[in-house]
Length: 152
Image 1: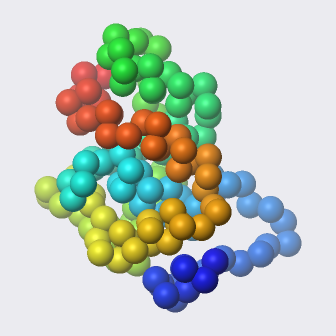
Image 2: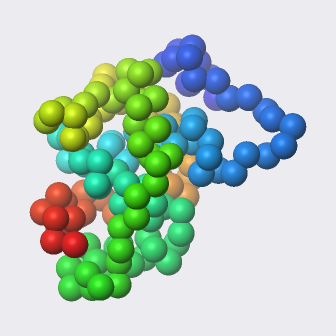
């Protein structure tokens, strides 16, 4: 993972004696947030916390992700899809802001990638990591808009 070395010396990947669940790994959550901001938000635009939460949680369960895709494409299955809030996403955003990967905009209710965050996403895209997440986010694209989320 040489591409990650030049981006930040603050983010460390450390092997632990006992495995930590993927959803509890802050480095994973930060990478996920940056990928969402890059692949599911229109270029140079910001993304609301609600959208980050919705997409992040859908990435953990294929069935929920499929419901989200159907909801975005048909926009008629509102009762089938329920967004969930996860405090780990909030923590990941706090750390991503601290590391300079994203920044708050619009009175701290939306977030967008910084130049460093875009470099981080480019490094992730060039490495063989987070393959499932990358393909899911590419499939979702920018179809989930703030207007669609506000209708839920």
